[in-house]
Length: 407
Image 1 (cartoon, one colour):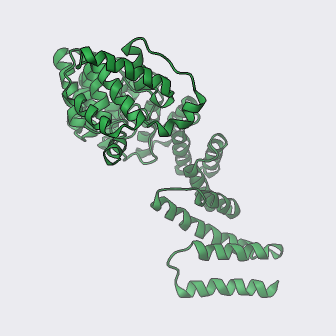
Image 2 (tube, one colour; image 1 turned 30 degrees about the horizontal axis):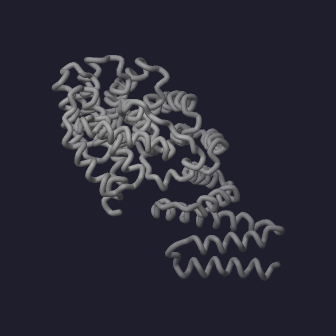
Image 3 (tube, one colour; image 1 turned 180 degrees about the vertical axis):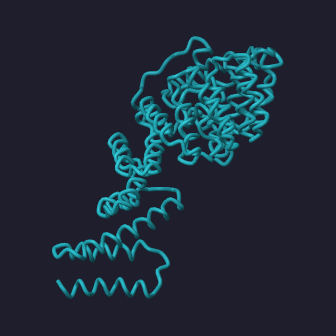
């Protein structure tokens, strides 16, 4: 199992950049300092047979592929949705082709994906080694193979394929585009800029390259240049959501909050179910002193995605700042009860919950018919707090005792 786990872990490293061969679109985290986010599209989710168990049960009928091209497209674009019958058909077709043509690029990729899907650990490793030895004879196949290799964390090896695509066709814009992605992932921003600029020189309609240029400059905190290129991305393709989000983030760090508000609202129009637009728009409203609008923005999102714990936590913090302690505590407790793997986040939630509980207790203690709730809130404060001094603990317990004696 050890070898396979390594592949499954590194598979996400390259996906944050754009690729012509990938389907799902990216989202950025709240902090714009995270370099991997918001280049264009994220990698497809590669899963094993076991993780697809429920899907297979729901989709008992499979597709019998007649061409390796059809099998390749299915295996690389929607592997997680395929039933076992389809994977079997693609696998058998690839094996048959490789008997007569061992260097067939798409057949080798299909075979690799099939082994990965089924959890064939040794075969996954061996087939990946085979991928590294292939020498595609067309620029397009170089990109296809390089993209698969890159998504498995082998950026330098992928770059060999991208360079080869340009050697085969010096005017191949997609080759430079993917080189730009690779340089970005290696944090070689200077070379990434050169590659992306060559891309748009050859193909000015490549809006993702304009966006990625903006993102590279954003990562370097060169916000004026970033703004210029992101505007160009939007000019090239006005309905391109990621560029609107990225430009909104650039406006935030430049404190151009009115412009940021417009961009983020536009992003939400395009992506009404994505949290990033709402969270960042809420932050913009906070910066503008519009706390009610900040709260309402998060409430609107939570109507669409009621289980989003980040939005819940952010809303709870805003409610706490508005002295709406009961609502804040309720939200924070619902977040606390979720299974969250980030210990730092969990610690911050408990810290905020402790503060909110104390303020709630203080408010309830002033109301005659809320004495029991006040005691519970004080106890929550003690339970959720860390490293309280003995004096503070004694003080809170005295408050509890006083309330109990008055009941």
